[in-house]
Image (cartoon, rainbow, N blue to C red; front, side, top):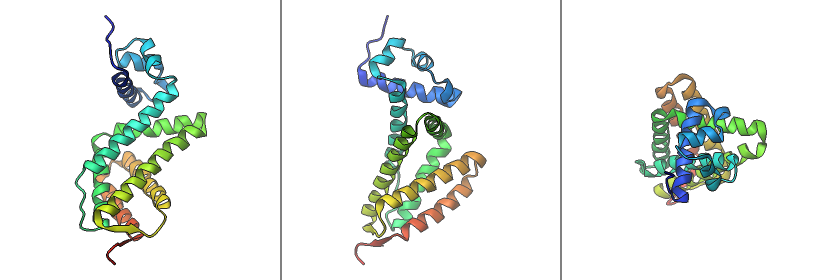
Length: 199
């Protein structure tokens, strides 16, 4: 008997299945057939939910990024100063990385795979990161009564570069203490590009 699943739930199950397949087997083996088998759905269910596999992969990136954004906003932000807020944001991110490194491996694999096939896919992926970083920086500034003195889009790019570096280094050596020290430097450097609104 075929399960009758609402479209949005079907999409969510396929995205979750794609993440599991890529984590376990790599993006090159994340075929449509493997993903629907992982989701325990018939092949036709895929085409009902997604027009192409590229659309599914984009949904994977969006889903993981949104999960991280939500976790960062829901985390405990230290609002005593902008630097302390940024430090707590980095701490939340490092905690997510420690708890589920496979998610970051999925995103990296998707980025490299898409770059080999089309620059647009990787560009779109990083555009999502830049937007998310700008939202986090705006949130931290608002939370602490601060304003950025450098262009937000440039700071967002810097934040993404810092997070990429922390992620790659941690995936290489799993040295969480070193990752946290790097995050402290990063928070201090970013905070230098802001001032208190009350000043």
